[in-house]
Length: 117
Image 1 (cartoon, helix red, strand yellow):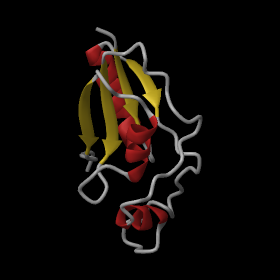
Image 2: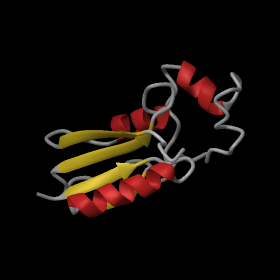
Image 3: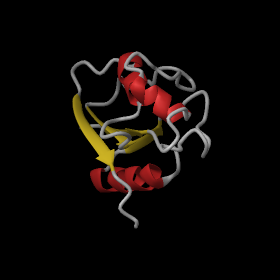
Image 4: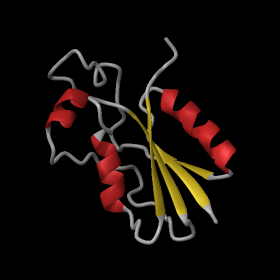
């Protein structure tokens, strides 16, 4: 069974966890990169006008992904890794799901919470 960890990381924390998961699972690693990268100002969850706050509030928001769809045709299992924003996945994860053909694949959701405190 061929496996891949597709992940989005805005600050690097999720990237570390995704790399560890890929190593343990024996999976390839692919980063989900938004066309417009997130700045620290974009990620300020305390600012209701920050990009991440506005995207989270907009159920129709689908940030574009750099390079478009991934070639997942050779994979049987897909782990989708992401940070938890407002108790859910960032909207770019929905972009990934809607852009890629995941039919016939085992999907595992991997929401990571920063526990380094």
